[in-house]
Image (cartoon, rainbow, N blue to C red; front, side, top):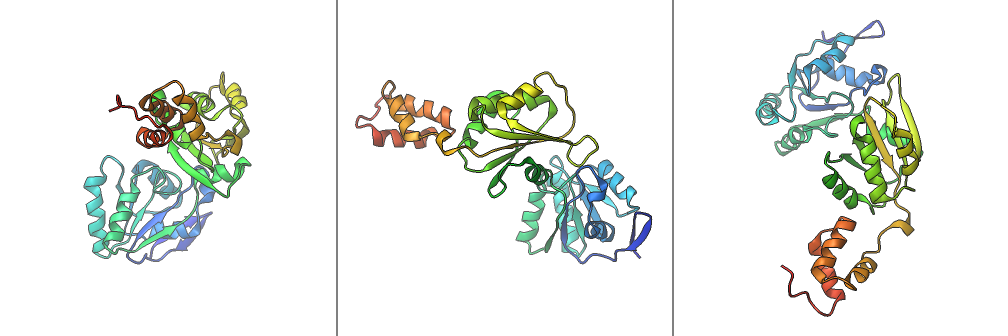
Length: 294
């Protein structure tokens, strides 16, 4: 009989049917785990996890002794086929991340994709998610949003990525580390403008949970001389219509003093769009093609 313990009581989970289970685990507060998730963890043949030490603490807390296997970005090509073989042998495999919902900023999508290609049943067990927890508590619109993960660590690449996202008409969600938070906010001010509303969500569901909102300029001032720790979710409001870049108008202004090629390159830098796309648009707007472009 397969069991787990919850608040001092023993529960019988039974064995899981053969399938790949995508199980969300707590992002901080262990009480956020669902009964269904515990039954799946206890009743699976094996648990694939990013770090067996982290998942081991969770299993120990609920007295679950299901075997674990490490599955992460650096060993996915080697371990993935082993997990697929188990699934094809009618075993139940549970996939978890270190915290939250698997496949959100981790390599689990490869395993799910291959499983579906091979007609292996995939069953989601929903639960905690840091991006969604931050979004619903931020006070920013929730009807249309985009999760953009971690920004690049280098400034040039980060600004390029932000430029690509600047005019998307949706609330933006990012992960960020404490060491890069201020630099990212300052780059967001440069690209988005300091008046964009935002929320910094730190240590969600944990003892020192903190959610601070304001515009980007206000938040930059708040975090300028403040040392912080913990996992961070940044929520950014969608741009106002009047703040969105009019690409055609921008190209017209640039073409007054630049060749088509230079204007397209500068517009690409400012908007995040591709130079090829903007070059073609510039040609349509300019009767004289740029013979010097390559």
